[in-house]
Length: 346
Image (cartoon, rainbow, N blue to C red):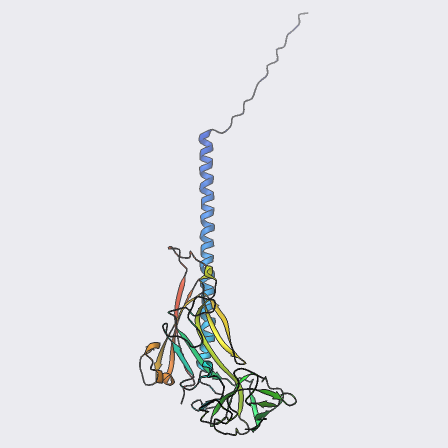
């Protein structure tokens, strides 16, 4: 029998890869896809930054106008109806208690505020921006009612009910239907703080020139100066407020470097507080009694601040983020707000 030879044939299968042209096309398509995704991401990020900045700016406008308007509307309030007969017996001629000419006054961008210096340091006023100062004493439920008044002697004092929120060193305005007087509490005695002493020689600053609280006030700072006066029962004792608003440097140039500041007086000391970041400018205009048009701060005569019946505020706020516009600048918005004064000096 003849043998059969079987020949085994091995079939080799070849695998083909991608060509250079195909690789280049794939890379191009991938780059275009990634570029599109990145474009959408960057656009969304920029939209978020713009919306976030606008929201913050809106919050700044709301807070700034609300707080500044509160001070403006209260300017001149003494807790009674006699804000034209005000006596100041504080020593040292403190600028923040100088009610003599008016209960408020504004300073244009070139005029020095007596308590806020121009400069580049933190909390110093930005040159070219306006400032304003207001004084008042607000009866807001925190006041005390006098039961009796001892007008002279080492225990010159007001007797009040226990539990009043009055402390040694507080600056107080006491008023009745005839007059108001600004003084500093030299001491508190009695159970529950029922005796508010207003004598001279206390250790608090600035202290009192005299314990005579009558109108007109003292011409010189001495214990015997001034006019004797006895406040009747039901006279109102409330804390004296003196507030100034200005644009100051905040030491943070990366977010704009400027803020809206407010000063207040606590027991004879001036406290400076940053209120809103990113405020670029603050300007004022005023409407005088009998006039039909608002005028700039510099156009108000020194003796006519008592005749101002309305104020127009122009506040410019800018975003904390830079590169918000096509030319790489910060967003900024300006809003004008008018405030009627409720307590003109009569």
